[in-house]
Image 1 (tube, rainbow, N blue to C red):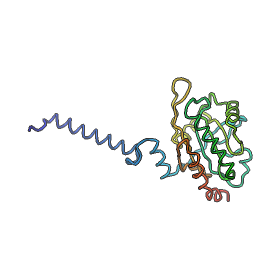
Image 2 (cartoon, one colour):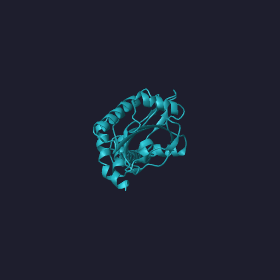
Image 3 (cartoon, rainbow, N blue to C red):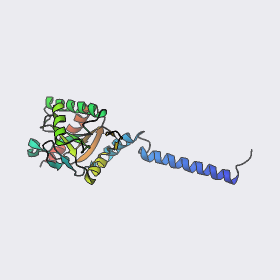
Image 4 (cartoon, rainbow, N blue to C red):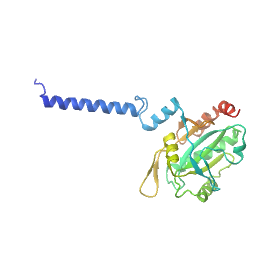
Length: 224
């Protein structure tokens, strides 16, 4: 059996090195192989190290500009802040946004039925500033039967702050070339002091409510 020549050895070494780099990259992308997808890695990272959500301006359905996570209306006068279940969408979305909206309607119903209005709120943030104007937000809210005391629908203003907020949540938005977007969709649970602590499947209304209500002690502390 003949040994590889010098050139062949270099080829073998190169292949081994490339393989090692690929394995290392996969390990990094999956948090040491404990998650098999980028989405799974994103969720694990948040559970291990909650992310402080930065401020970003949004436009409301009544054409005001406020901070993305700010309480508004009656919520702004609450003595004790509430945990938020946050979702990202755009109103013209023909795909997962419809399911996401249905889940948030379910969350709203459950919050009412269980008397959790003082603990949990819902927040829908659009990343489509071109089309999701205040009038469109108002229309969306009517169609989804949004209770303004529990659920806010807002549009992120374009700019660096918008990009920083999306990055903090791990939300990827890519124009699809047909006036729409490809994006990941999930339910994000945020503490009253603006920390993203859990990310759940977009259909998991029960899980999101359980995670948000578990933060009730934090709400009382933040309200002191």
